[in-house]
Length: 152
Image (cartoon, rainbow, N blue to C red):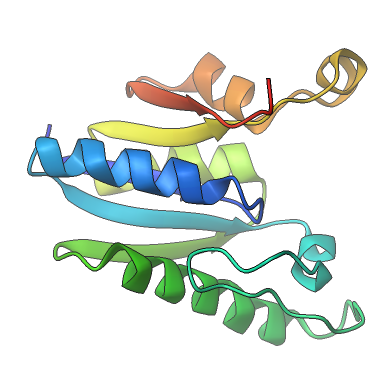
């Protein structure tokens, strides 16, 4: 395995996903791509405690400022790359349906492994909304390394 795609969202638990995914990639001496999908603009105005050098951005959500959201997302990826302090790391951002974009780019980039977090969601939320992780698992031909990020 020479290419590891690490997916990131705006949850502070992404730090755990990034660190564990990167550690695995280093053991395999693999190239890494940090991947984020710009899908839900409501996440960009959320304020979290700082993690991986990323402090979030507190500004009112205006749906007409898509370019600003793209800059914010790229800044997030850049700070995450800096946090890892490693070589052979690239970043990629896409816009659209998260699961679909992960699958498309993993194929395009010829990833050998997809690393993603498995957030704890309530049963009703899973039934009615599904999760990105389950959507990827149902449709991928590429192995997936799931990292549990829930509190339990």
